[in-house]
Length: 357
Image (cartoon, rainbow, N blue to C red; front, side, top):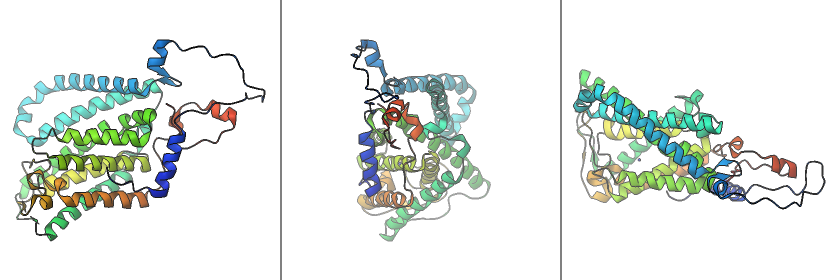
């Protein structure tokens, strides 16, 4: 939690526009219509060449500032709060996830707000529009996640590899764990999506264009999963592909809210509702006594369904259906591409995919 590109004709148009936008157009005449000045350009100083581009600090340095700021904010906040909640964290797996991923998200949000101030942008420019919080896009993502995970496990069941078993919880314990894990996985969605597909995706796209940036970040996302004790390379590849799908949702909706909703519901359904391993881990306080049986290629084995062969079929279907039902590029937004006086002066048409490097 990468594949054939389902965007077909639309995707080809995006790639042409993205490729054409790598260098800003230069006017051949001034606004008055007279020939452009032939005075030789002054050479750039070494410092400016390394750190600054045509429109300010280069994307790599901006990304570095964001990373350092996020780590600093997270360490400071965690250091202040940990002594106060140390005992509670030791008693509950869910509370530990809520705390550590919550602190991580708070640090990322602080760093993103800092960069928004430096760059004179808003959170909406980084695919986190506050006004759309928990709106239709979020709930659509929730439904997609629940359906996708249910279809995945349903396919394994039809091949006689998965059974639901009996209820493992009831009464107040069921209500308590259901609410606690819902909050935990919601915060996981906020943290991981903000880490990989908000400011980082926007800024890398500014430097190397959208899809190379999406591929790089999705590869990192998959590799990070190998740090989970029970993960395998098959599960890590699946996580990278799901990450790439989330990049597509940001591309087509202009918002991270769909991805947050789907990330939350996929993890919640997998770990709590269906009670199966996620990267080899089974949470404490899950709903069912479910079980896998059969070959590893079918069930994913101890890794869980994200290492099943059927997960790649599901991911391909997600790309195809979403690509057909959500058309048009919404991220990065046209206004995010920086000053365009040169194009206006030259009478050039403005591409909606233009990104200044």
